[in-house]
Image 1 (cartoon, one colour):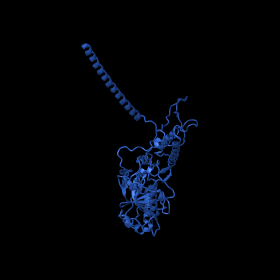
Image 2 (cartoon, one colour):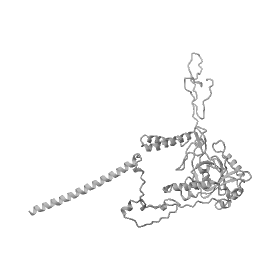
Image 3 (cartoon, helix red, strand yellow):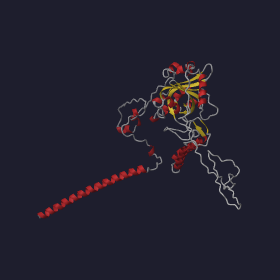
Image 4 (tube, helix red, strand yellow):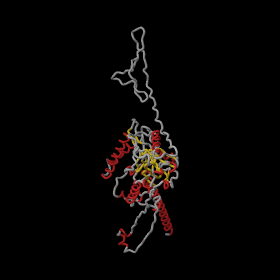
Length: 468
């Protein structure tokens, strides 16, 4: 009985040990399979992402903000003061269904600036301005303040009201206070009119011209190959950014086939816009921000009696230097102060599309109203220099010479000549005693045969001549 009890005990112990071993093994296998499944799923998702799903009601739900979120740090320059105010209420079940029991009152306070009216006031931010332009004090009077300044800030305030519920669309402090003044000048003797505005200097790197620069050099995340100043193309060299836009159109048209009706409407509008851009790029050339000295004016500045128009000649004053320029592009209604990358890098060599040369309101822009040429073409820097010098003289002259621009557009690549084979004479036997060489080819091909010498850019087809 005792031996039977010991044997049974051994069997029970072995059975328990075996069961534990099997349980541990199965658990290990289960964990390994789970880990392999998760890793394999991540690899598949990374290697071949699934196509973007059509937008649905759930897709429009705003993403949940995870982690700590400090609203006061969301917008650079906007001062946020927060306060929690509590009052006694009803039962929680009643307050939960009342939308006003748990609410935030959002109120933005902004002081609208007063424009500078005299040279002395402008001298606080640009001390050299009166010295550089001796005739400016006779034109910069309190009554010279243009209505464009008030219209600019009316636009800014209106957009603040419209976007107050969308904090991500609010103007930053920097962009709200980006204009010191707008003055409509008129010289008392020459009657020359000019529009002066004082602002900072953002950078415009837009524009393209396949005739002058066949290779693209878009250097900005927001780059656009267009400018408001444009002219008809002069060569058959395509715009370097045309293939990219054509590819975008193909992708939009492909997506239209399987899109939902709502999405199809958006894609149809996008396709129409892309076709218009393609047509314009095939027909026109534009300024190039990297090479051409031009400024950008708000769209609101192109209307009214003091309006500045695309193509008008202008000068930009930064520090003690006066730069010849032209109005080359039109920007948003609520932003002032922007110049091409060419001007920006001359003012500050560290400038790029994301790094403005002047952040303070120390850049002076003077546009000579109504001076645009009747016909437009690629910029002639020597003509620009002479025209701006003459216009500056009409407002009292300058105490320093204007900056002289040098053409930095790289030369067009020289086409490589294509060698053409010369006719090779051969000897044909004849019955005569003294055989004469007979050419195999003639420079005048028959009407049914292809030309023997193919025309190239460097070597056009030669005119017909007598045979050998």
